[in-house]
Amino acid sequence: MSEVIDLLIHSAHQLCTMPLQDGGPQRGLSLGDLGLIEDGALAIDNSRIVAVGRSDELRAVYEPRTQIDARGSLVTPGLVDPHTHAVWAGERAGEFERRIGGATYQQIMAEGGGINATMQATRSADVDTLIAQSRLRLQRMMQHGATTIEVKTGYGLDTESELNMLRAIAALDAELPVDLVPTFLGAHAIPPEYADDSDEYVSLVVEAMIPAVAAWKAENWPHTLFCDVFCETGAFSLNQTRRILEAAKRHGMDLKVHADEFDALGGTRLGVELGATTIDHLVATPPEEIQALGKSTTVAVSMPPTPFGLGHSEYTPALEFLKADAALAIATDCNPGTAWCESLQFVFALATRYLKLTQGQSLAAATVNAGFAVGRGGEIGTLMPGALGDVVIWQVDDYRYLGYRFGANLVQQVIKRGQTVYRQV
Ligand SMILES: [Zn+2]
Image (cartoon, rainbow, N blue to C red; front, side, top):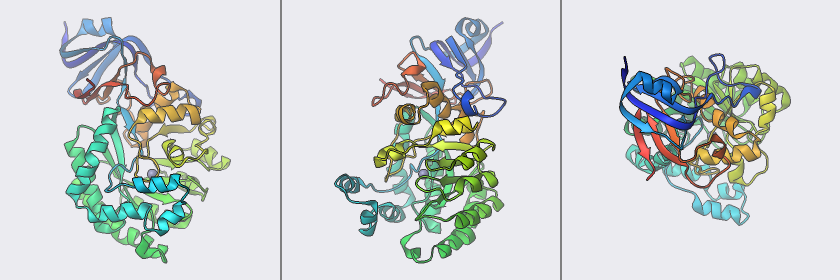
């Protein structure tokens, strides 16, 4: 007797299920377990995956209301982008032209450019303007395969503007088919009015912003909300980072840290000590902190578009993290300053060349492991039964095309919770 289901995707040339490892992310050198099924099929009912296997087996069991013939295609989980700053107002194209011409970031900052320019534009935008300017970016990210996207605040840098960014993220989450995961990043930069007293700004973050964000969350956001700090020379010191993260933890937030993008201040060790969900950037991380991260449950997130966007040659030493048994994820870091990148496919191209990940490892880092990086491990980033029916059907038939080909969108169809939300014509 056949069982009626909502959707059956069948006849996939390759179907990559991206299994968990012992109920967790794929750690260390076991990264890249594809769970590959040839002539694969996937049964989805009521938004969730109910079965995965060979096409003949599933077609014998299920009677789908809708079916998709994925002949000649690769099928993977929807991609998960675990680190973006995708909500902002304004742009900095002129600044990029000046940087190409040799201007330094310090010169651009002194002229009112850099992150302050984005902060000013974001502060002067109302929530509707933020939504209008960010919608197309998030849609493009989805059209390139992302079905869950983490989005940080951090361009408001005062309580009301930071709350407005959260309101915009929540509204876009409700409006768009893609799921957004909000992160409060009030400690992204020290705003100009506190340039001479960064501790005073940290006090504002700890005493005013975090309680206000926690109150907003209690009313408006039933899911996880992260707090993140940019622990870096010229941003927040290790002690300031600790103050903020400990306050956020007391208010029930989960933690992330921007650490070791340029300088190693000890942010990785601190993040591990506080049980952070992720530590992100990890370019200049000292060997002993790589080891500490590898022994923890914290996920390492690398964003190769950032050094690429800056024209730098130093990337995350990904293989060192894998040798230390760390769980590695990759992300776009989409932001208007260093990496306006809306495609995880482009991240595959960079991760294979500069992080020396294989195509399969790159795919695992942006699916199953990225799910854990946003606190939704096992729920997204995998096609194992029980996970959400978030799927990408690709125009290519082999996973090894991902990262090998770049610069064009290889997505054929994006499915979110069992519904087609994008189809490339
Ligand atoms: Zn970032």
